[in-house]
Amino acid sequence: MSEEGIWGYHPNAGYRMGIDLVGYKVEATDGSIGKIDKHSEDVGTSHLVVDTGVWIFGKHVLLPAGTITRIDAAEQKVYVDRSREEIKNAPAFDEAKYGGGPGYLEQFARYYNQPHM
Image (cartoon, rainbow, N blue to C red; front, side, top):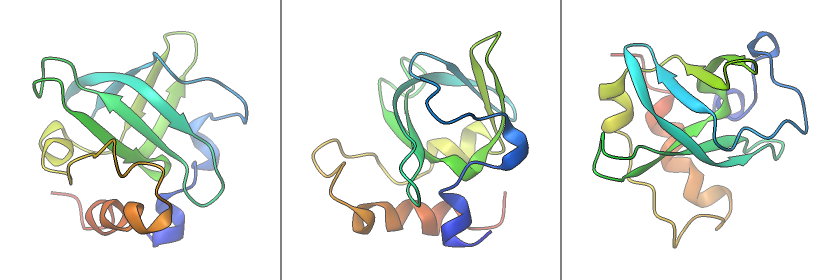
């Protein structure tokens, strides 16, 4: 997947512009990881910020929109194509640097563009 592709919603994932995903549960390939705390649909940098709650001791993780495989609006769940371990090992989300532009997001693009474990 290209760096540009990782930041866009897959056409078959069921995303519609303007839908508010905040509060949706997020399911990795092997279980739940938390709830969406922030959501961006900015072209070229679309992503989710997920509050993992007690699973990773309150850590927040950033997931590029390209990791989303399906959105179930009825169940308010978002499914991603990464395992809990892959998400846990992702670069740390830093609220202070969040919103600092594409430069901050590059580390996430490099990590999530790696072959799946």
